[in-house]
Image 1 (tube, helix red, strand yellow):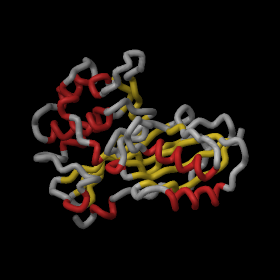
Image 2 (image 1 turned 180 degrees about the vertical axis):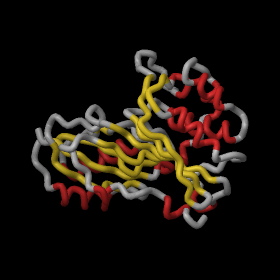
Image 3 (image 1 turned 60 degrees about the horizontal axis):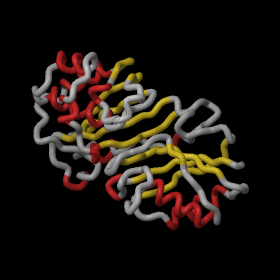
Length: 264
């Protein structure tokens, strides 16, 4: 059965998350319906991971199967003509039947945008905390997060059978004007994990937590990080990496809003 991979971008503020829900407008549900109408057969998308309501994606990856070969360029054009504002498919390609968007992902990259000053035109994409006293402290917190740790204190996962051990390959911060861009590259991420990492880092910057507190959160499960969960609007699934057999054109996933923030 032919299998296809697609790369999707969406404004999460317009959807109730990725996963299909009854009586809610979701990314996967919208794409399933549009694809099924165009291909004239029932289609089910499998994404690289779920994003919650309000969370955006620059390079979400998904795959679907069809009973017959399709003209990917024609389907891509028709799909984007029919999709609502805030949702766009950047790329569709044929892949091997064994490919799985979630199971075969090697790394996932998320970014989070913070600002020290209110961003009137970017409120859906940037979190402006009530205060951000010492943003330079965030660098020190990110260093603690890097590596293989048990992130149980930073997870909203309710399934106790799911391992909370995650390898954070890279965690860093760049500044673009008044916007701080935090980037996390990891093997995978737990539910609400990135938002809690960011919220905890901001709490350290505001002297609510110390670096020793963060070290303790990584060794003993604690509910404190959950009380400082950052809002979803600043979070983006930036990209998903696969082995060399699944190549993604570099221009499909451009650097996110850094250019917008440079002079703000």
